[in-house]
Image 1: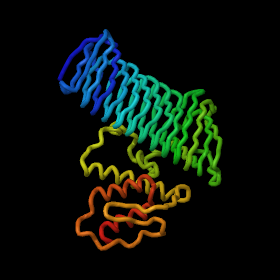
Image 2: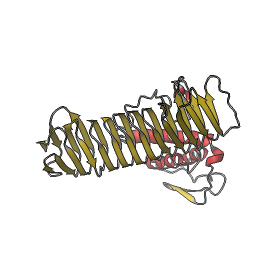
Image 3: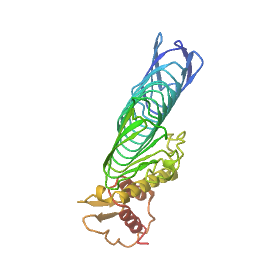
Length: 366
């Protein structure tokens, strides 16, 4: 199905439900182009209000000044060049937005990537990684489950993150910036920044001319320039502050974002369903979790009180070591068994050493 409708240059579009993936692109035209399977797209129009739903994949081409209300997206979504307000209740897959106006999101259950928003950004719940670059307004995120990378926020910032944060700030006079992280925070400021920093963390490292580090300090207040902007960082792990633009390049503890030079154009794009790509992704996440576990062993130690079943085997983690495996299986180790172990490691349910022993056991003790 391909249908063209006219609802003016500033239509209000309500998308009740998309069962599959969604693609939205803003264009200079005044018409709305709708593409989807004939028997899966349902459309109603009342002047400038357009209501849509689709059981499968949906593709829209809309006027750039369109505003959207998305209620439920079952797959992944890509939104480009739409400068009206965007409201989204829930998306089950990855969400990527480029060149937009103000954005309000209730729940995104996979990765979220945003670049170049002309208004404010609000997120209530993000269940995976979040990457944000260039937001003209304020950034407010109530909860990010995993990691956050943020650069180019020109308004105030208030974010709460479950794991690591890498943030580049150019603080505005009298601006307020609050970052709370369950693990580590890396803050990069320009050398000419005017800000008062209030820092809380297990260790605090300040890479700044004239600032001396205190190895025992878990709280510090620092003033740069006239101190007009207020920046508060509260970390469950370590805090690092630097004025070097390449600070993240050598920060290998910030697994998702180190070495990327903050080129996030591809972050949050659709994850391939092919097995080999899924395996690489799981392995990368497992390596990141292993690094954190090694750096914070005392903080993140966990006690096991149950047996763990992986494929054909059971292991008792009440003991100090993984017991010797049974004789090598006649059939090869399955990809599902490997993925289960990597998932347990990424969730910090087992240590890196225990994961190695489990993998070795599945391979027949090699």
